[in-house]
Length: 195
Image (cartoon, rainbow, N blue to C red; front, side, top):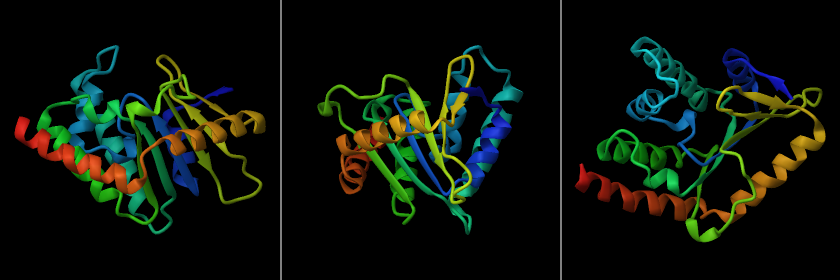
């Protein structure tokens, strides 16, 4: 594995033909609303200064233009159900965030699936990984792993295959895109009434 700077990751992400994102803790950065992203950044350890929080949020929001570009990659995510229940920011923040997910899930190149608690034990022990695939046959796929103290990426073909199989397994355990959309839509009303 190798260390990967944030700017290097953003460059790889922008060049990817497809992005497969698995996460246990948060909604993927490319799908976050401004308020959700700000609440995530405020929760970072060690604590960030207000300026760093805003820089982080601005960078995250800027990256999201990728999903609306002419060369938008295929984006698919498998998120643990806990992501829908963990109140990041406030109930209103969560309602707005889920509305955004429902909206994004309508895009033809975006697939959002949630793995229900009832699916049982997950085949991935780490909190976050992203598989980036590229259209050029000479460029190998990359697995990005978000760490607590250091991020890394893997480009060994065996490692990539393990992560690809794991991601396909996670997606198979998840609700379908339509079921996920229905669950999120039902939760929006609950968050609005709690706000």
